[in-house]
Image (cartoon, rainbow, N blue to C red; front, side, top):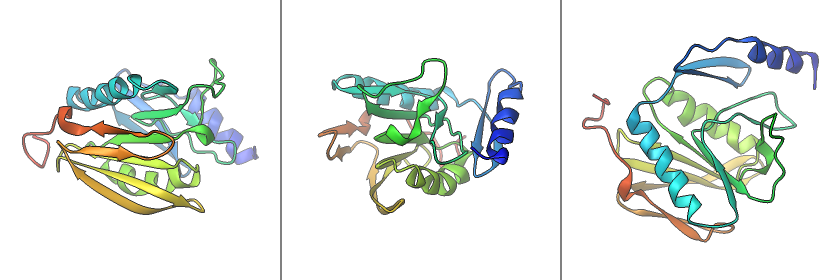
Length: 186
């Protein structure tokens, strides 16, 4: 870890986060964002529930992940990794061991999730990045990772199943995902 990396981590460790907010380190920027609405949590909970039906996966929501090669410290809305991967229970989850991450779009972090995190999760080597958009009522699965870049983005309307290839071999059913009443989230 470089001096800059150590400073970035010490800044994060020293920030007192107000109730209802979370802090992430993305591309050298400290991002403070409000917690999601109940709609946001319902989608996260549905992902947790569906993955729990399939053995062999450790899942979590809004937990810090760290990659040994980068200083970024995102907190994905959801992620899955093989259950046999060791986890430092007093540290963070290993970002280089995740098989899938998901972000649920919100007005406050939409640009970060659609642009910065596509690049970030690709650099981390995470094979699948799922963007759940409750405004447009659709999900986009970034996949076919090659040299840290996702080569494809497949879009599925809410109500359809998203087939996940190896190592998952099951589908995410989006029919239970709630959506905003209007495209602007009101």
